[in-house]
Length: 563
Ligand code: 9MR
Image 1 (spheres, rainbow, N blue to C red):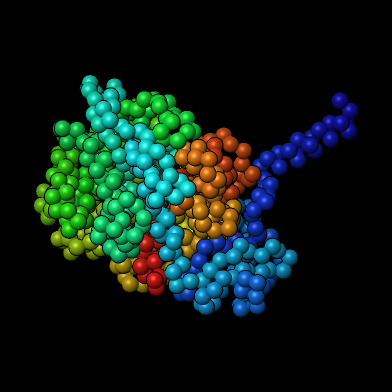
Image 2: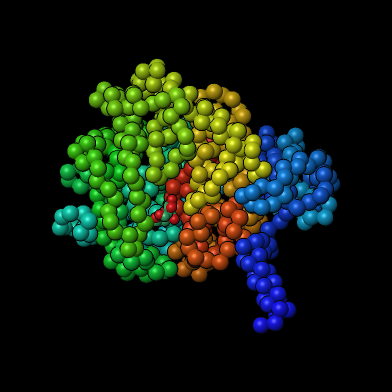
C-alpha cells in the first residue's frame, strides 16, 4: 500500500471512530435545555445552554414580548456529557404564562409554562400509568381511551417452576406488569408499593377520586384503589407457610405483542428471603394505611406480613431463583436492608417490641449513603421512622432524622457541582432517572423534617431534569413536553397500533452500560440514551421508576399547587 493510501485509510478510520463515539446531534436536541412542562411561580428556574459564547439570555412570552433578561453563568466542560455548559436562572420570573428562552445564535428553547397547577396533569398521569400496567383485566375505552385493550394473562392455575421446590399449581391473577415485559416480580413491586403508600401517608389528598380508573367515584382515594390492585395480587403470591413466591414469568422473553396475544406459558418462579421481606414491608405498611379504607383488609395485611417475617427468620439466606431465561433477576446479596424495612414497618404498624429490637441498633445518624432502589430498602425504613407517627425511642427517631437531613445536605452539594443540577456526578446506570427521583424523595423527607424549603426546591429540580433539562433534551415522561419519549421499550405501546405511547410512563434514562446493543448517538455517560423500542437498557419503563416520580409530583402539587 502506498504511503498516501495508508494515510487516507488512517484518516477515514479516525473519522469513523470519532463519529461512532462522539456526538451525532439528534434532530430534536436543542442547545438550550429546559423543562418542557411547567414551573410553579415559586419554583427555582434554571436551564442549561451548551456550546455558546454568548453571555446573556432572554425569556419571552410565546409569540410576544421579552419579559426577563439575565446573564449566563459559565460552568465549563462537564465530563459526563463532554459539553461546554452554561446555566441561566430566571427564578424571579413568577408571572403565570407560556414562555420560551432565547440566546443569540441558538434555536429557541421548547416552550414551557409557569403555572399554579404546574404538575396537575403530570401527577395524575404518573399514577394512572399504573392502571395501564394492570394484568389480567381489559382496559375499557372509558378509562383507557386510545390505549384500551383486551384482557391478557389470566394467570390462573399456573404451574410452579422447579425453583419453587415443590410440585403444584396456583392462581396468581392481577397485579401490574413490572415494566416493558409481562413479568410480575415481588421485589420490584415491593419498593413501588411502599413508595406509593408513603406518598399517601405524607400527602393523603395528592390524588383524589377522579383518576378515571374503574374504582373512581367510590368515595376512596384512587391512589389507594390503584395500589390495592397490586396488593391483592401480592396476597395471591404468599405460600401457605408464609413465604412469598418471587415472580410470575415465562421461560423465554415474551414477543412484542399485546397481552391477549402473548401465549407463552407462565410459571410461578422461586421463593426467596428478599421477595418475602419486600412483601412483609409492603403489607405491614398497608396494614396501617388501609385501616380506614377497609379495616378487615388491613388486618389481613398485618397477619400476612407477620407470617412472612416468621418465614424469613427461619429462611434468612434464600437467594433469588436461578431462572432468568425470560425474566429479570432482581438479584441481591445483602438482605439486611429488607429485614430492616420489614421490622420497621411492622413495628410502626403494630407497636410490638419484638420488631423494634431488630431496628434500634441499626439506625445511625449517618446511616444513609445512597438513594433507595429495588435492591436497597434501607432508606425507606429511615424515612418512615423519621416522619411517620411511631413509638421508637427518641434516639432512634433523632438518628433517623439526622441521617435523612445529612443525606439531603450531601445531595444538595452534589447538585451544586453539577451543571444539570442533579446529584449524579459519577455514573449513569440502568434506570438513572429513578436514581434522580429517589434522591428527590429523600429531599422531600428532609423538607418535612426541617420545614426548610431549600430541600423542596431541589426536589422540584429533579423533575426539571426528567421533564427536559437533560443532556439529550428529552421529556422522559411519555405524552408530555414538546420532545417526549415516543418509542419506549413497552410491549403494549409498541404493539397497539396507536402512535403515541401509553402516557405517563417514565423511561429509564441515560445508561452508560448500554446493555441492549442498540446504536447510540453519543457514548458520553449522560448522553447514552436513544428513543428506540429495542433500547431496553435506557428506554424501558418500569413501575419502580414511575413510583418515585409520582411521589415527587404528588409532593410538589400538594405543596405548591393551587388547584
Ligand atoms: O431495574 C433493573 C436494573 O437495575 C438492572 O440493572 C437490570 C438488569 O438486571 O434490570 C432492571 O430491571 C428489569 C427487570 O430485570 C425485568 N423487567 C424490566 C426491568 C426494567 O428494565
